[in-house]
Each structure stands twice: as C-alpha cells, then as structure tokens.
Figure 1 (cartoon, rainbow, N blue to C red):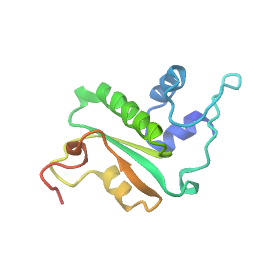
Figure 2 (tube, rainbow, N blue to C red):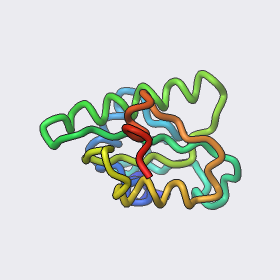
Figure 3 (cartoon, rainbow, N blue to C red):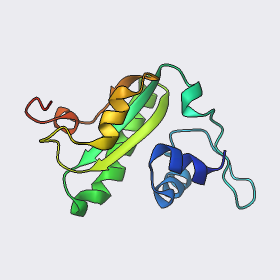
Length: 128
C-alpha cells in the first residue's frame, strides 16, 4: 500500500506522514521505491488486537501540537511493544461526547488498546 493510501485510511494528513517518514517516526515499516513510499503493513482490519492512538486538541490553532502528540504516543506504544494499527486525530472539545472519530474508534472491535497522552484527551468530566 502506498503511504498516501495509508494516510487516508488512518486519518493522517499526507504531509505529516511524509515528514514522519523523513524523520524516521512513521509508526509502520516503509521504504522508498523511486518516488513512491510503500508501507509494509496489512490493512488495519487484518491486524487483530492492535493499539489505536487517539490524539485530540481543543482548537485549530493547536493543530501543530496534534502531530507531536501522535508522535509521542506512537513512540510510547512502540517502546511498550504494542503494535499500532490505527491513528485517530481530532480537533474539538472533549466536554461533550459528540466526537465522531472517537466514537467510531470505541465501536471498532479490532482495537484492543487505546493509547492517549493524557486522560483529559480521552474525555473531560466523565462525558457520556
């Protein structure tokens, strides 16, 4: 699978993935083949028991912090030996339970572990 297809599947911006590849921080094995960067990973649905990384910031002006948060949580998961199968990023408040991508992640049975950097990134005040 090409890195661009992988980014669509994971909800990560392609430029972020290319930057991670250049810095050696891409959470999946990849190599350069001419102008393409093929990702050596089976589809997410074929990775049972994978770890999902959930990253959230509250406002659009914090969007640059989102990439850093994903990198830190992914690095932690790799250090713990947890295979990262999915990365979910959102910009929005956690004061309510209307986070579409997060709710889809909770419904996904293939992710057995959800990694977040701080508990407040998961939900504030015991949201629904």
